[in-house]
Picture 1 (cartoon, rainbow, N blue to C red):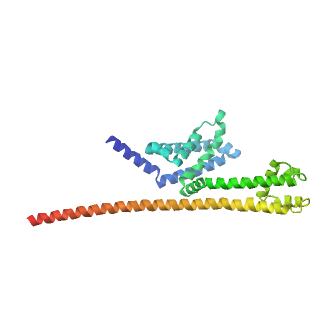
Picture 2 (tube, helix red, strand yellow):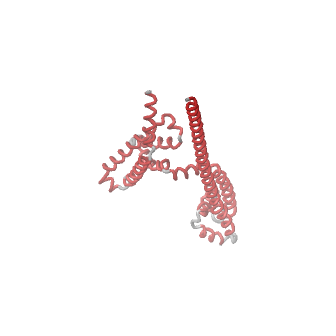
Picture 3 (cartoon, one colour):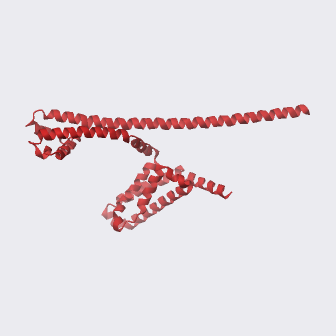
Length: 275
């Protein structure tokens, strides 16, 4: 009896913590906390309202600790089966670390509390899950990009290095210059300067920009969009499967009730006949 009451109490706490009003309240506190942390970067505000800001910051942190403790109590060890719960737990642990002495650098990491919005807002959580699932595809494209990037850096060093050592004198400087070109920042000025010595330098830069900037960028976007679409379909199919199972179970229960009702009617008829 005691175990059943404890389990019921845990279930009620879990439902309350996960309820929409509580989630909205926590989201509001996260946004307020983000504003407070931003205000602490202004010396004039810290001088005037430093104690108030510190008090509010600690009060909000206390609410976060209570929330995560209630979740841990409600779900027990199942709490750590969710990656998002572990994510929230680690952020709270970092926030509780001492901010003095050798741990003073951790004070800056308080801003990580804002990242809790990701675990609380379904739309943000969906995007992050899609990005994580897209990592293998993104890694393959990134490897291909590095291959092309290295090839063009070697070509640029051997071709333009002797005349323009400040840009292409070494492999490292060539990679740095090509990265600047890839961002389309001042690449036309670099190309115009090189064309004074190398008439066809423009062709090199156009090919590099087409491959490194436009093609690779579109491939990254394509992988992410495709992953998000697949994830959306998977979630849709999962919901449909759960709905079908629920409907099937309800139909079975209804059929069992109908059979039991028919059996009761037959027994009642038998009783009436015997009378």
